[in-house]
Image (cartoon, rainbow, N blue to C red; front, side, top):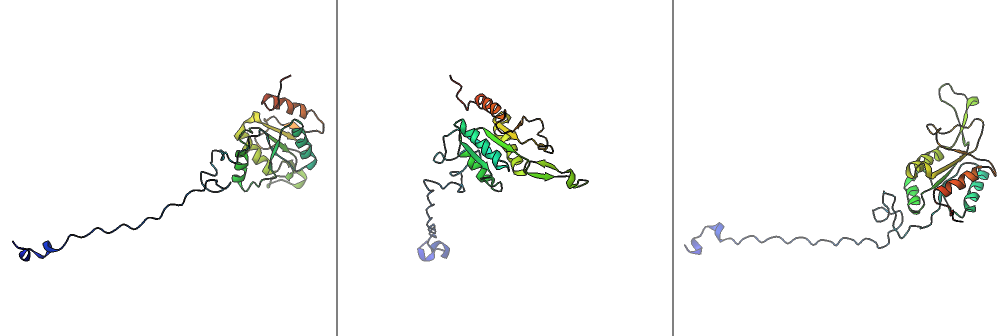
Length: 206
């Protein structure tokens, strides 16, 4: 059969494949990510931080109360032992938990915390309570961070002082924790020094 006698569909050329559209190159990741930027290269949820930003100092994380004279005395005592205090609160907003985690991650060798509890708020029950029966409690921010640090470092690595007052009450469920009463030039400094030695933060060699 000649080409003129072949059916029409056999005489048509085979369809040519369509060319694929060109693909745009993916943007390269920055070599030095900005601290706090989104993405695993800048911050990881397991509290590890980019080594470029890490501080190899071993200090103490500090949460302060609402009494400046007590705060200053506690900070001076910590520095007296040659230890650097890293203040978490009130320097960092609790509304930004990412900043708190990054602050902790920036000091990977620090695994000890010092918390100051003072009577910052007067509280009484909504039902049946009266202002005359109000009790003094530490602020919610301090209580939140106390629990946060206890969960992260353990009870032996969190040292908590409180200001003894007649109507002061401890956080709910924390009555069995070993809180130490604060007094100016009081015995709490000796207890604190012993704890530092136990946790290896002070050189005990002669």
